[in-house]
Length: 96
Image (tube, rainbow, N blue to C red; front, side):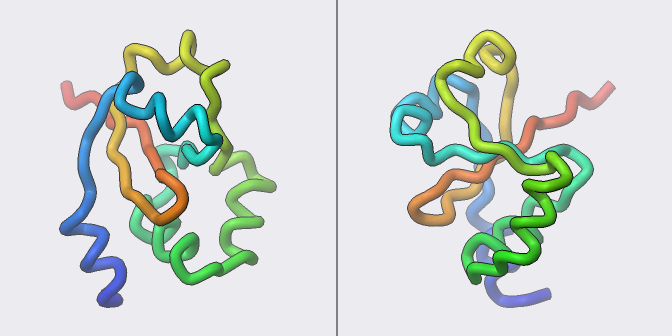
């Protein structure tokens, strides 16, 4: 595992939708699909791996969120990583 991924594993946090408000206002929040590895995506963002990010975007596995998404995600819990100037989030899956 790369040092960068190891760093992200130590930095990952959880939050609710309302804690993302300030970042949503500045269009800095990206939602990663549950089928993708958040650490791979974070590393790609941090290292400007445009091919990897472009592939995620084209396959609808990554999208920018806005305040317009509040109704859909207001009750969701997220894992998140800060990759300046962005915030990468992924919906936390509920464990039965």
